[in-house]
Structures are given as structure tokens and as C-alpha cells.
Length: 277
Figure (tube, rainbow, N blue to C red):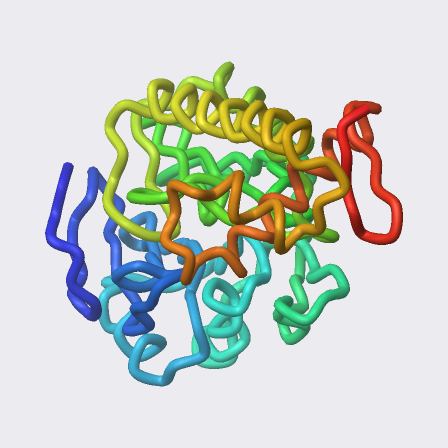
């Protein structure tokens, strides 16, 4: 199922599923945001991406049928802003959860329908079930193509890197719980919001959980050695295996770990300095 990650080129991923990468490569987006098209005569578009005319035009050209539905995994600005443009051009129904408050959210996304957890878009050609997976974003939804076990994970799971958990909307406890929930789903492959297809989904999920718990253990260890550390001080110890240029981003996930530990009574803070309990 692997294919080259080239923006602007429609690639067949599986029966009835194509991928089109938006031309927005970068440190946080990798090759670009993955837009998926599901169906033949009637098409569902998953994560239309950033508001770029060239990408919207490419989606319409690649559809090969009538675009009836636009599904959004979450409302970060590299995933949902094109939804409004695509809906205006096609009349498609917007499906997803409205944006929470926050500077990184796309408040232009106004869904026609907010899917409940487990609710399915069931049409003649396919059935896509919505799985609420908060953690990276409180309104994050993965979509499962049930017949083939293909899980469209948005930013809940990415290829090539772990995701940033950015409080207050990002929540590490919820993220780990959502990963645990996916362990029990009948998934054959993960189709992430960035990067290539992941063909061993349960091994990938286990690796991410293990990685997060190992990082959490390192937080506790380093905080015990360096009590009353600020976030900027602690990140140099906990993420000493990461390029220092990425420490400002890593601070966000570090804060998410600390807030989880605080909620569990394992850490506490005073005046933005932290120590283990």
C-alpha cells in the first residue's frame, strides 16, 4: 500500500480510496496534509486541508464522482479550512465537530452535522464510523472504513513522528485513553493525516503508548533530580535526546505530561515551578 508522498498527485491507496497531499510541507506537516477521497460515484472527502485554491481544485479534479460529504478529523488549520471552500464549490455536507476556543483552531469550520461517537455515515458504497479520540485536540475524530478496516487518524497518529499534545485543548490523559480505545477496533491499516500508510496498526499503537509512558517516566525521574524546575528548565533534561531547536515545541507535550501527573497526584506546581510528590 506504500506510495510516494508527492503533493498534488492522486494516489490509489486501497479499493475506493485515494490520497491527495496538500502543498503545505513543513516541520509540523511533513510532506503536507493528507486529503483522502473515499467512494466512486458518490465521494466523501476526509480532511480537505488548508485553504489553498490549487488544492481544492485538485480535490475536485481527483474525485471522479460527486463530492457529497466533507469529513473533518479536527479543526487545526492544516486540516479543515478548505472545507468551507470545497462545500461552496460542491454543495457537500460538512461533517465534523465544531472548533473549540483557541488560537490554533479554524473557527470558519461550521459543520452541518456533528457525529456522535460510533455514529456512521452509511451509504451504498461504504460505511464510515466516527470514533471520538480526544487528546491531540478535544474535538478530534478518527473515521473507520469498516469493510476494509482502514482507520483515518488525522493527527491522532502520524507517520514518522509522534504528535504534539498542546494544552489546554490537548490532553495527555485523554490521548492515552483514546489510543487504548483504538486497540480494540478491527483495524487493518492506519491512514494518517501526515505521512504514509501504516500497515501494522496495533504495533504502531503499542509503540506510541510505550513511548509516551517512557517519556512520562523520564519526566518523573528528571523532576526528582531537578526539583522546582520551570518548564523551560525541565525540557532540557527530559528532551535531551531531541534537537534543542525543537524544545519550544516539546515544552507543550512536556506540560501535557506534567498536567497528567498533577491530575494523578504525582506532581505539583507552585509559581510555574514543578516537583514530584
